[in-house]
Length: 92
View 1 (cartoon, rainbow, N blue to C red):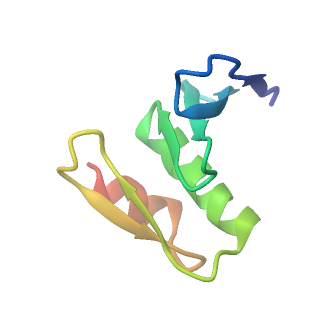
View 2: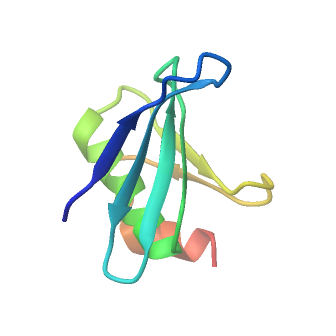
View 3: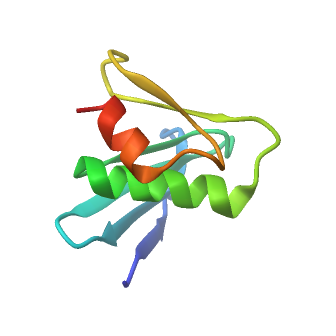
């Protein structure tokens, strides 16, 4: 898997980095907020679920992370116990 990460040089944006990650069925794209407290991403639900799970496993946060859709219609708490299938089910 070859991810592409770009430094966002536009001062007027709220994001520091943007990225693209190829997955089996789709390409996930997203942005890291300058505060480093928010990652916005979009793509196939399974790719998004795998990415969210990787973020949780990689960062080992002291608090659960919240994943939600663009319209704030659905949400899912993601922690070390969450399975990719749990996330997919929450947004299906």
